[in-house]
Amino acid sequence: MISSKIIANGILRAIVTLIVAALLLYFLYQIQTILIYLLVSLILTLIGSPILDFLKKRLKFRHTLATITVLSIYLLIILGFIMTFIPLIISQGQNLSLLNTVEIEKKSLELINQINRFLEHHHIDSNAVFNPNNFKSIVSFNTIPNFLNSIIGTISDFGIGLGSVLFITFFFLKDKIMFVKGAQLLVPNSQKERILNSVEKINTLLSRYFIGLLIQLFIIFILYTIVLIIFGIPNALVIALLCAVLNIIPYLGPLIASVFAAILTMLSNLGSDFQSEILPKTIYILIGFWIVQLIDNNFSQPIIFSKSVSSHPLEIFLIILIAGFSFGILGMVIAVPLYTILKVILKEFLPDNDFIQLITKKI
Image 1: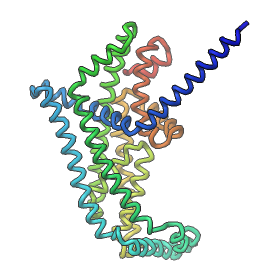
Image 2: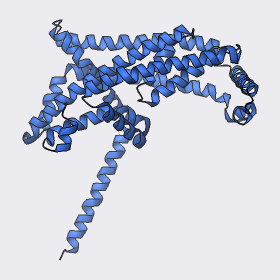
Image 3: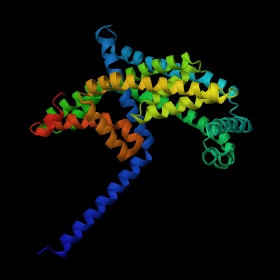
Image 4: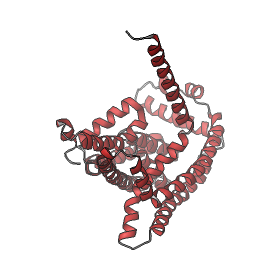
């Protein structure tokens, strides 16, 4: 018969375990920003490692010089983004009068009235959907200054985060071997070979994945730019860049990018006739973006996702779909990397399982 002392000790251990777990979760919640910095730095390290190896092996750079060169490449890319966005902020501030909420409201209502007139001309009752009075009651343009202030605060936080991420990335690249050796000391000898093999494969596959993702976004950016330039949309480079970045979100991102491009197309043509100018140009832009997505979905994406992480396109689609329903947009973004890590670990530790052999045969 179990004594009351044993029961009490079991309950006490369970309570202590729950308290420790709660404190650990609370601690992780408090340092979530640092964890994000570490995650981003790890991704940059995975992307930069092949460049680092190329500089050392082919160009005979010393390790520290190669590391500084990789960080310099990152800085140049970031500065390029910043220099690209500054003209957009200035021009959009002038063209759309971002600080003049009355002007924004006037132009938005003008656009809605034009849409109403177009629908009524085609005998469609649109008052329930596009009633200007309903629109004014739903949308408060007085929140725009607060929104802009929040953007300024976000940019400030971004600067701090960027400096932290680059600092961490520098030491991840420079002292990668030291970190690996330190991690080896924590690994049990009985599992050391399997764990080290898993880490090596994960590093290779994720490096290929993130580099492939950058190539995919660059291809989409070029195609979007061509579409926008053909139809004479102002700030085509910046809009194409924003829409390309949205493609990081699988499947949902392209839809958001198309809506975003359509809205900017309408706003850039305010004052023109809706039926003869705004609507046709918007439709052409949407068709152009959908053609780009057809090219991406049938050529770029299958090659990059399938080849880089050694998974079937249908397999990737289902994983992204499940992650999206379970964890939202963030789940869709991180689904492929996490699934790749899981597959590598399962292959190393459960190599005799028939199902594991089936899904990991290309790894």
